[in-house]
Image 1 (tube, rainbow, N blue to C red):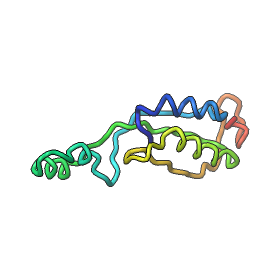
Image 2: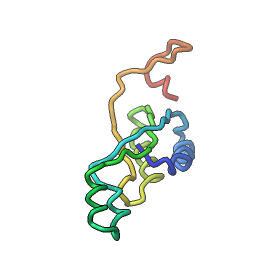
Image 3: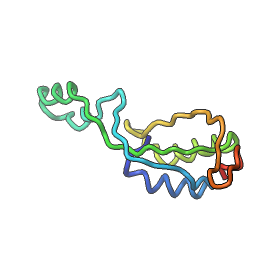
Amino acid sequence: MIRIAKMSETKLALSDAGLPSFTAMPVLGRGKGHGDLEKAESSDPELRALISEIPRLKSKRMITLVVTDEKKELAVETIIKANQTGKSGDGRIFILEAYNSVRVRTGETGDITLD
């Protein structure tokens, strides 16, 4: 999950790293923090209380990238490098095991379908 504003930078970074194939879709979500509170630092206490009671969903982009085990660390490092600002909301990477892959056009299976 990444910031929408980082999508172009992420796409270019992945392509430059030799990982051009992925799927991206718009999603809504929130973390455990209250990002809206940061904007209301100087606001009155009543406004801050209202914002903290109504957590808002934020627009993000979810990238699905399936790579071989050998390319896993490269993918993670590339995404972090393109998205890390040091601020809340930089994103999250989930690493899941894919048991197999099938190329529909040819019927091929396994790692060969990921290149």
